[in-house]
Length: 387
Image (cartoon, rainbow, N blue to C red; front, side, top):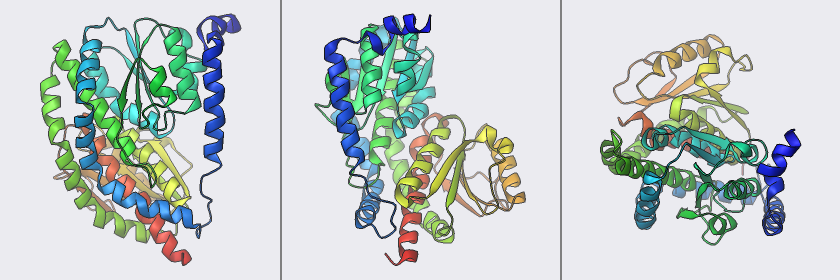
């Protein structure tokens, strides 16, 4: 039975042209993997990429503004189309950082589109969830290169099912761009490890959500768009507040080989992106743990540094309990929270206080100290290695 379903609704149903597209994309992706730098602390290419990360990281507020301006017409057109379409479900497709961006955007999109919006790993949509995709589905796929094999595959499967498809990619003319019904082009540089490409894509998705909501007459759409417009300024303030504190924390924790991040709601994605940046920059291990699971997680060891990314709101109580448990186990606790929030006073080893913003939009601020941790801890490790 499973094989018959897959043959009519999954990747097995793709035509010869689509299969050839996947072969080409897979070959290119394998070649790109071979060009990645090594884990050697003295690898010059790795250090070059880490050093380039800082300028790209600090430029993110301007990049967000630039992407809204550059995609203004397409955003309006696509939002108008989605607003009047009889949708029953949206799939938010990506892999790695791209999937985390989709998770961060979920609540905003769901509230404005008025249908369930499910972040889905690209492989899962293409290979396991294809029968759930119908003509009433919206499939939004994010790949910065536009050549991620499984993400392209998921989009092709969605096209076969008759779904409306929207791609977000840094690369105009890429396979994902060419194969989708519509595309938003992410204008971001990636000389360093990924930062801008995630924030710019997330900002575009938030803007799309607000515009669709306005077109549907959804409650809160105008307020969402108004607050979103001031977020780049809040991001600049957040970077200025975070940078010196995170640099000090990173110097203190440079000798570690495991770094933990936790958050809830939309900031679960901030934790995932923070862990990814630490791994990419430092080449050490980092892990994101759902805030609701932290008290049940027994893998934590003494001295493992933990970052809690928790704006004021429903996650504070669980975050305080998690911080207390972490301290009891002998770990260090660092917190990013809202300015004026005092729940962690006397409990955390350091607190980064960020501007107040609606929690649904807060990942654009809370992923910033997490990204900074990746940069600063890597530079501290280079210094320790004499690189």
